Image (cartoon, rainbow, N blue to C red; front, side, top):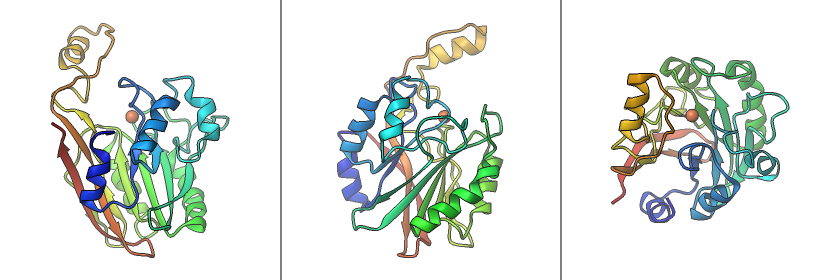
Length: 242
Ligand SMILES: [Fe+2]
């Protein structure tokens, strides 16, 4: 990301870049040092997910970080915040919201229980609103995208590490993709050395996962919107990194 992100942003004309960073630290979690490096490399906001607490030093950092969000629907005493507002390159305020899915995940509060109030708060602060919905089930991600159609600029799914082929602008003007995919090694089992993941599945025995290194790609979604925050286009991004 440090090598390729600045050039890629220029090539694609990106004025605001959101990176899901939950597995930046050796494949599990995020450290404050790596967060700062990603922000310095050109990310405007970092989002997180179910691995948010894998590195204990992230808790105090999240309390002070103004450009890093964790899922808003975690336990009520969790450090950090689930919504931030950060200016894009041209000065436009952009609200970024992070939510975690309930299906097949250990999530303390259902996303649909909190989303209305959060979206209202985000819309008070900014016309451009991006939701990173970090969830396992395609049904839940599509449902939230539809529920928010016309209310936010984009609902971008993360977590599965596999990019889906459904990048679209919905009828109400909200861009959506069920999963933006993974930036990392794709000659792997969702980023993990394949032999380790297969060993665990064949034997049921615990094995320490290690990140793979082959077939590296930056994946994501490129969303264009107007000044009112209405999405105009949504395209998958899939860029090999030599
Ligand atoms: Fe995740």
